[in-house]
Image (cartoon, rainbow, N blue to C red; front, side):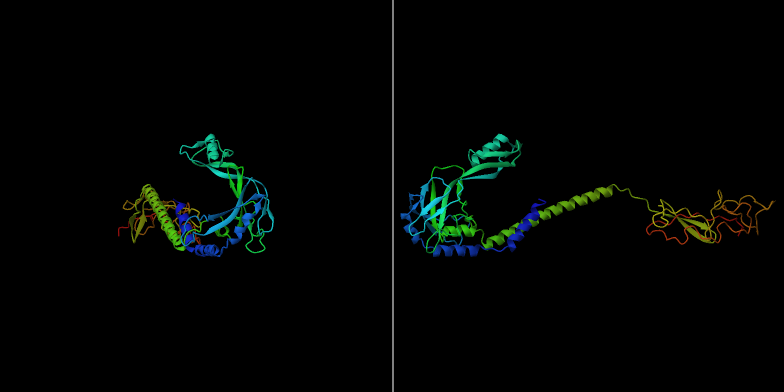
Length: 399
């Protein structure tokens, strides 16, 4: 079905656009029937072929297939004699120059496809019997020892000369025609009729070059069939296109159903993630919201992971361990060897990260220096904002 639809569609298009020559071919054949003059043939019967006396006969032309518009009453007239198989024949016809038809092949070897007609398959002996029944007892089978139904190999067989025909020119002086070496398409010396059985004698004919039978063979290229009319060809093309489109539509529908099923199956395997929420932290003088939930690592620059940011210039210091919002102030710290109680007018204890021995009024580590990642490209769009550390909670001065 996958290939059948496009093939039928293409064949239908070809039939629609292809030129139909049947009308011209039928016209040419009918004109040949009308123009044919058999009277010279009547005098030939007093002659001989290969020394044998001749008989005059009339033949209705064997038109195959559609006969619409064809002059089916057209007849051919010829002389013949029954002679044994030979490679050459001498024609001595009245009012015709003596000539010899030679280079005739008496035996032709041929090959045909062998088909298994058994739905359960065939073995070699069955295929040999098939070849013998189709092409004579001398036929042999070439192929595998066993096969399924359909084509299984080849039948090799011999054919034997069964009919010979020579053509005499249509104008005087009458002699053997130079265009047609035989009466059968493609009109070569060896283009005679053959059969799978050998006969002791065969008919040997002589025809005139303007014989309607020769015109029929030439126009139809040996098939004797003029084919479909233009209307029949167009109708067949439309039907094939319609069938091809229907098959293509069925294939597309099945494909869409399969794709939809696969997407639905994949979506059912994806676990939903909880939405990210923000937590608001109150700090004197400002309100800061921090995202919660899973946070993906952020790329610092083109694919490299960003290191955790350290507190620096313009950023709040990290919260002291164990000191949170609403907790009592820490115990007094020792500055310069004297213990002072933190209170009004006293500075806040230094946050983590100060140099050892540092005191009040000394700059923090990294003060005035660029932050890590300074002059680096911003994080790639679509990534969440990195989680920040909450600021250090200063002492409660009682305001």
